Length: 120
Image (cartoon, rainbow, N blue to C red; front, side, top):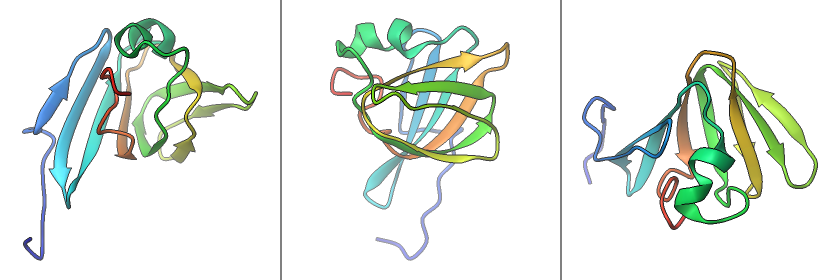
């Protein structure tokens, strides 16, 4: 492995496009970093649930909000809205949706490998 690795989301190693969703993945340091774009009107339980087949998102997420606002409700009763400039961790077992008319853009350091697939 080289001493320096760098990648660009303009040429992702993998892309996924569930309803109202764009997931772009780059491979780095033996793992994957994802850029997620959730378009206005996106809701996990409507756009991703049909793909993965679980009642709630079962992926743990750690990331950074680039743009837009996302409302998150966890099955333990906690609720949050993440906004640009924030970092976050969301445990498995949640639903989420875009707030307003702006697309939500996130960079995720954990959770990207299986997101939006039958495995996650």
